[in-house]
Image 1: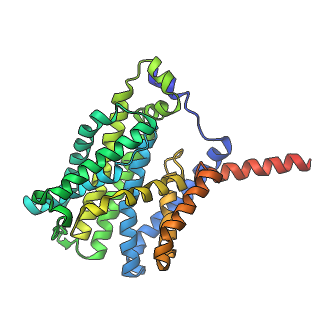
Image 2: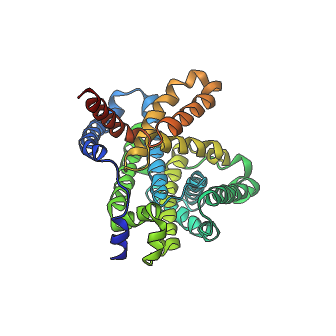
Image 3: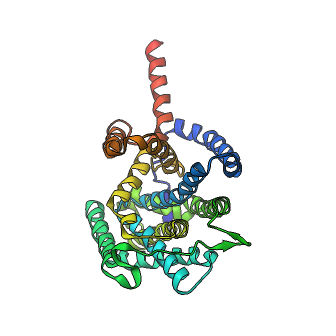
Amino acid sequence: MAVERVATQVTTRPAAARRYARPMGLVMAGVAAVFAIGAPFVLPTYTVELVILFFMNLVLVVSYRLITTTGDWGLAHVVMMGAGGYSAALLAKGLDLPVWLTVPLAGFIAAAVAGLISVPLLRTRAFGYFIASFALGELLRLFWIRLDVPFGGIRGLINIPEGELFGHSLFETVPYYFFALFVAFVCVGIMYQLDRSRLGMTWKALYSDPALAECVGIDMTHYRRSAFMIGSGFAGVAGAMLAHRMGAIDPKNFDLVTMLYLIIWVVVGGTQSFWGAAVGLLVMTFVFELTRPLLEWRPLIFGVVLIFFLIFLPGGLESLAGRLSALARSFKRGAS
C-alpha cells in the first residue's frame, strides 16, 4: 500500500498532453509498423543499415530513460552497452555460442556488471551520482584498453561471428534487419510493460517525492539498483547486437562522446512519457544524417540543439503539444 500511496503523488503530465498522447501514440505506432515491415524491400541498403542502427539505439535510449525515471542521470550507460558488446563477442569467439544465445546472455552479464558497480555508485545522489557514474564507467573502459587478453586492448576485438538464424546468415542485410527488429520489439515491449507496472510506478515515485517515499518505508537503494541493473541489461543487449553487426568492437565505441549523444536524444525527446526519448532519437537521427556533409560542425550544431532545448523547451518535444495548447488558451482568453 505504501508504494501506491507514494505513486499517487507522482506529478503527471498536463491534461492537454495526456489528451493528445494516446491518439498520437496510436498514429505513430501504425506508421512505424507499416514502415518496419516494408522498409528492407523498398529502401536502399545504406538506409536499411541506418534503420538497423536505429533499432539498436532505440533499445539503448529507452533503457536509459527507464533509469532516469528514478531521477538518476548517469554517464555509464554506454559503457554498460559495451559490457554487453564485449560479452557477446567473447561468448561467440571463445565458446562458439550461437547469436540467439549470446545476445540475451550479454544482457544478463551487463546487468550483473551493473550490480557490482551499483554498490559504490548508489551511495551517491544527484551531481555526485553523475560524476561517480562517469568515473566508474571510465574505470571499466580502462580495463578493456589495458588488457590485451581477453579484451584486445586499444584495438579491441575483431572477427566476431555475425551468426546465423533459421539457415539465414546474419551477415546479409535483410535477415539481420528482421533479427534487429524482433529484438528491439521484444525489448521495448518488456520495458513498456515495466514502465506501466507497479515497479515502474515506484521508480517514478522515487523521483517525484523521494522524502515521502523514504517516510513510508520504501527501500530507495533497492529500487534504484533494480532500475540501474534492468536498464543496463537492455543496454547490454543493444551492445551485443552492435558487436555482431559490426564484426568488431573497441573501447572508442563507448566513450564519453557517444554518451553525450545519448543524453541529447533523451533531452530532445523528453522523459515524462515512455515514447519521448524514442521521438528524440528519431528526430536527432534525421539531424545527424542531414549534417553529415558538415562533419566538422556537427558537435557545434548538436551543442546548440542541446542548449536550445534546455532553455526554451526543457520538457522536450513531448511537452510541445501541451505548451501549444496552453498558448492557444491564453490567446483565446485575451481575445474574449
